[in-house]
Every structure is written in structure tokens, then in C-alpha cells.
Image 1 (tube, rainbow, N blue to C red):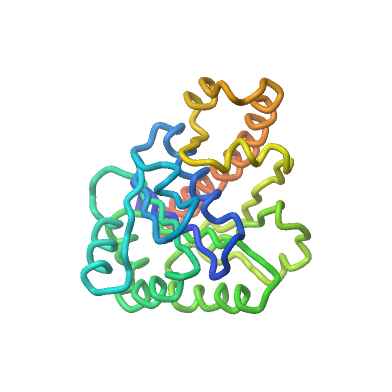
Image 2: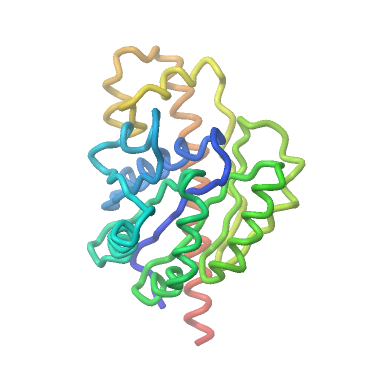
Length: 238
């Protein structure tokens, strides 16, 4: 099968690990690549994806059957858009349970989507067990560990093996603490237009942010290419 678009689920069962920052970056990356993109926010409180990118994000519910059906139907809808899900810790187990029950990843592939899970890795047992469970519960999804270098050491990396077609470790490079205040206030976007017109960002900060963005965008681009190559190799074997 040749995939037309991707569905990327940015996930973690733990709070405050930089997951929403990754979802923001991924959304703006696809916009910069010229892709139509639709993001779904399964979080609550301050600093949610919908607050940063309201034009491209829909709030989603997973607590009842109606909300579940609406979300999963939209994810696999043939509407020409790349889909991104910001899966917060409060909705993590419910989302995975429903996705496993309906064999979501298999259906996504059948409809021409490449389903991938970007899992923010941390050393705690809860995250390690959740990651292991994703492989058995959603075996058709590409499972890629995401190392947020702003969280510190990567000594726990070996607890998170890659799984699935084209999977690879993705790194979110560290950003100087003094620069975080420029990007952490909604509705800040990493789009070229907003960065270029941001009057409150000094030139040296702008240059450093652009350097940082190039690094993470390269990580996203390489993951996309790995998944595409794995798909092409699979098609050739068939």
C-alpha cells in the first residue's frame, strides 16, 4: 500500500513531559511542508494545543461513545489532511483501549494512512509499561520513542525499542531555558510568518529558535522518509 497521509499520535501517560510542545512543532512542520493538517486535542487546562493553534485544532472527547466515534471517524476520513493527535495523560488509557478494540491502526492503513505513535520517553515504570503495552495493543502502528533532551539524561533509552515500519528514535533538542518564555505563551506559532513578524523576539533569539527548529524538523522529515521507504519496500516484496 502507498500511504497518502499520516496519522501521528503524540502520547505519554505522564504530565509535563513536553508532549504538547512536540504536537505544536509537528503541526507547524506539516504546515511548512505544504500539507493540509488537522490536529485533535485530548487535553484540558492551560497551554493546550487548541490554545496555541486554534485555527488548526479541534477539541476532542473520548469519555463517551459519541465522542469516540466522532474522533476516530475524523481521523480516518479521506479529507486530504494529515492528522495529529495530542494525547494527554488523562485520556491516554481510554484512547488506547478504544483504538485497540476497533483495530484502529489496521483500518487506518487500509484507508491509506500511515499510523505512527510518537511516545515521549521517561525513566519511570508507568511510561515503560505503557510503551510496552502499545506494541501489543496497536501492533500495526509505527511506534517511535521521542527523547526530549530538555528532560535530562537519556540513560533509559534502551527501555524503549523502536517497533513497526520505519520506526526510529526521534530527538527533541534542548532549548536554552531563557528562550522558553518566548514560545510558551499562547497563541505562539512556529510558522515562518509568525516568527518573522514577532516584534517581541530579539534577533539573537530569533536566530537561535530557527537553528533549533531546523534540527527538530530534520528529525520529523527523516522519520517520514523512513516510514515511506519501509512502505515502498513492503510493496515491492508483495
